[in-house]
Amino acid sequence: MKIIFMLALMLFAQGVFAAAALSTLSWEDPTTRVDGTPLKYEEIKEYQVYYAVDGEPTLNSDVIIIAPGTTTEKVSLDLTPREEKYTVSFAILTVDTDGNMSALSETVSKDFSISSTAGPAAPTNLQFTIVCTDGCTIAEVPTQ
Image (tube, rainbow, N blue to C red; front, top):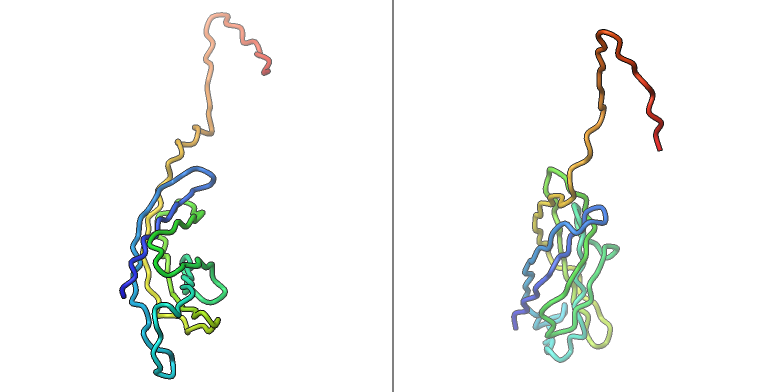
């Protein structure tokens, strides 16, 4: 059975909602165990989807637990807008109903660009000049 998993990435930029990205991650269910004996679909307890931003996923990476038959999951990533793309990488392992775990699958990756939705910064380094001719008076205005 082929699993198609829709991954909705919610991308945030410095507390401001930046973008939502939809990505599809799919895989084939394993049908055998490492020793070659059959593995039935009913014997699969869960999938563990490990992911990393700008790196390789490991067993120490963030993880999403997926039950067999689940087709959609949301992941929120707090990413700061930058010129270069982010690379989000995924690897999956299978856990059977006895708690046995497979090795991590090969890694697949997806690139995302993050643009800011924040307004522009205020102008800086403001300067002004007053030119007085014929008796002008300059008074200091108190700031409040």
